Image 1 (tube, rainbow over the protein chains, first blue to last red):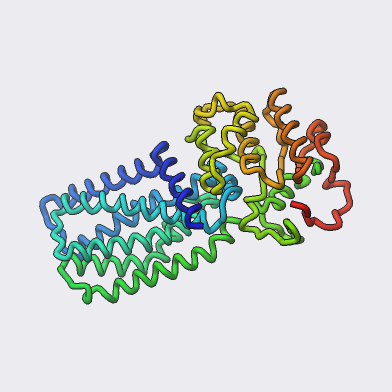
Image 2: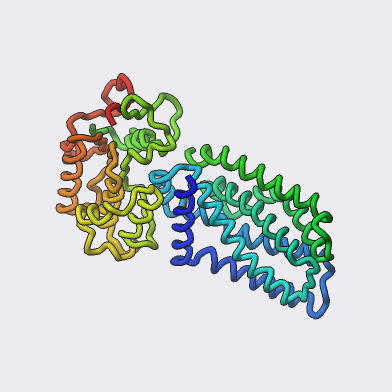
Length: 220
Length: 184
């Protein structure tokens, strides 16, 4: 299953490199949003609470803008049938999940880099900050991948995606924002242990439930 | 076996259900090999499927499409050149699919269907968009597969029907005694 999933992920990366559909849209979105924030705040410095919240708002909207493509493009182009004929449903989900996690990770490196430069953000516990963002990404990708599979056959995909994903993501976003804020303030690992436990538990439960449910969604 | 019937009678629906691509509301489809039932999630190893509504990836070439499918299936690349030569696309194997004509795309779908030497080959209107040479390719593939494999063609075309030894008409034939497919 894992080998098949890696091949599906490689196929999606090659496809993305050829079409650049998601990458272009995501990069443009991030540049526009961060520019708007810069013009809005001018030379003012955002408070640490505001910075943490703002960062996760950008991450949430940027990812919900692009991650649905993994399933929506297969449905729109009629290639989902091809995938069903060459692989197990669990491999398809794992492959798409790995692709989305990797894409989110690459995208977030770019977001964090730009965000720190533009807002002059001073992160006191940078290692823990990266850990929080990475774990948050894992949960975010898990939710957005299964929701993308759900909405790929709906007619109003654009509207449904944030509507369905937001309630599911709320506990994850709240914990991630809180942990990010504490990292900016310079907390130790003990200070964010509770938040990390919630983020990790959330991701494990979501990924497990997604594997159990995906077969029903994919083969409907 | 040819599956025939009026437009909208459910020929394509039936072959999709046999191939495990569509859920069923009632009944059961069992595919077995050597008296052991093949699980639904590994059926793709035994099945080749060609239809007008099957699409391959436009951003890749014909060769890349088959290579990707082989990589995902884990069957290796040994048969790609053979099937491309067989369907007459070897010379155009490096062209992107988006510049293929509809007939060339149909030929590539045939190559995709037989790439892994499946035990069951399901063809839904296999000669649509094909020229005379393309139809000859389908004839040859059908002749080969009905020898030692299971060949199912969903069609209303007289020529495609003539490639099969049995016919099941959805509108007029009595219900089959068992949908069990034996001897894979």
